[in-house]
Image (cartoon, protein in one colour):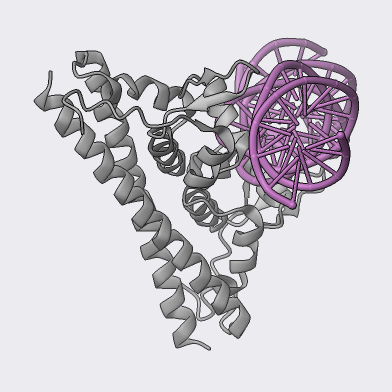
Length: 125
Length: 125
DNA sequence: CTAAAACCTGACGCTGACGTCAGGGTCAAC
DNA sequence: GTTGACCCTGACGTCAGCGTCAGGTTTTAG
């Protein structure tokens, strides 16, 4: 371990990113097209990613599953990458947080509704 | 109130169903096309719905919001309409219930993740 | 009686996150 | 030197829940 702890982890190719994050290669290219990630290029044109990209991709999947769009995720990214954040950026974070919270509530009431129905159908077999 | 309590509530047209349920007329037609609701027809061909249809449409909206497809909702319908239910039908209900529960959990963890990020960004303005 | 509002049947359009096919380079292994 | 795994760039396909336009009939209000 040198004083300047720049171990310079080796860049990885798109296939490894996809496997490690559990998505398709096509998806990773799509994320780049949407401006969510960026890659260096090898002399022959192949994409080379920092290993940390895998965590980003996992995060994207989580946000997609929560109903966010690529555009919205892109707007939140500056809050994660840089140390300082804009007030507008923090507002976006809170807005999305509230949206997800509302969705959780909706799902919970849908769940309760289904449970009611299940109870009734169990009573009248 | 007669002995046979068949008040025979008047049938309503598609526009009233849509307004009462808070959806578009197009949506109601779509639900019929998907086999979720059925309508009588006036001599001139206009759709006539029982007032209870409104509640069904609201229910559909809730299920759509929970991520169910028309096909899945259609499979659950016999559990609501008839007194007796099939074991397979009850299985569908439980399957969908579990799916929604899983989705709630996913959203909750996404929410926690966003809250983490919000905390960090608030610490480093 | 007439004009607006509401209804009808097609049928094409839209959005978003990819899947998938076409056609073609690159690179280590054997 | 060739085979096979991996990579590249377009570009069209998919699915679901509607939106929307076209062109025509019906009902309702005044």
